[in-house]
Image 1: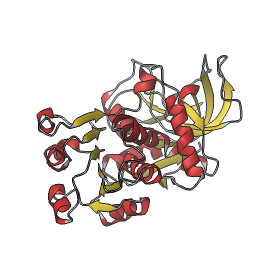
Image 2: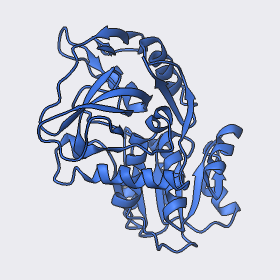
Image 3: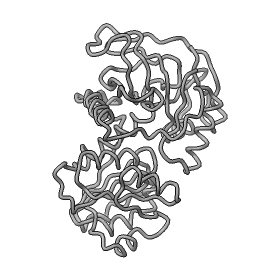
Image 4: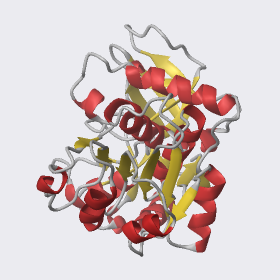
Length: 333
């Protein structure tokens, strides 16, 4: 089968078109004919940090939509012909290949009203945003509409999904940050009630608009640069969540206000084979229903072409520029 991989960790030029054997599904795995994939910051992080065993290729990609073409002997919930979407398992080969095996417990049927490309843009960011908001921060549907949440990095893939999930499932006032005219328009279009410029003081902007201290803060990017501001602006006894990797995290900043601090890593369940792995399948089902009822839309921003090394390199360069909004997708081989 055709795939895109690399032999040595490094820059995007390490990615190359390769041929690999088609995998066989085992146990609870299904074999998916991949129709579309999207690219995430985790792809770039792994490409620069992780080298495969000598002589082996590392295949990236943790977002896919496709069609089930074979199932393992213990599969219960999917059959050949099902159209599915998922993010996959960080400990296994990625989705940048014609065929991909994945555990049935972390996939679901894709939304019927989305194309494969539109669907592939969403799983990783949807799972990350959902788990952070509803599992870690414990945002509630009945939270008072006078309470608010601040999302730092609202125009990125995760921020774009978080805004939509909050507007679809809660009454919270949604405050999002974005710096450029285009990205500010994007987050407003997704439903953000208030948009702040993260190049300016967040504390001063909130004060200038007489905005009550947010009960929740969800930082998706450059958290280290905002820690002191977050500690100052968040409400006492609030909840703070982050998904990136700040070089330093001074937890003492949050002690005085008794702030709960949460991490979210959407691969935890599959990486450690947790007892609640199927929660991700159920989560994706609920997101699909929200999409099919028009409450959430795809965050696909650009289809960059077919799935090959050249186009994936271009997508990696775009993500590393840190100027993307929404998601970059590749479709077909």
